[in-house]
Image (cartoon, rainbow, N blue to C red):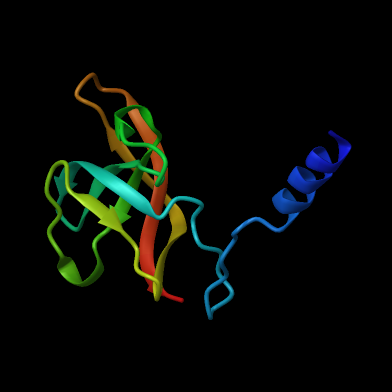
Length: 110
């Protein structure tokens, strides 16, 4: 039992954090499902590889690289040469007039 706990502890120390060539840390999730396409980006659910039902996961704002249009329910995943990094926050107002803030993500080369 102690060996298993030690193995879990050591593996958590060496988790899969990827650093880009500019020294920026990749966002912990690299797959998303678009909730709503917007001009210049989209509001999307974080959608890790192990989760098929992303509708209850946290929201992020994806800034569209090269003015790509996103559409509702689209699945978006970074490639082996790119990753999403956080670049500030995105603020919006819900239809119930509630102000919300979510991470703003941009796609960059590794």
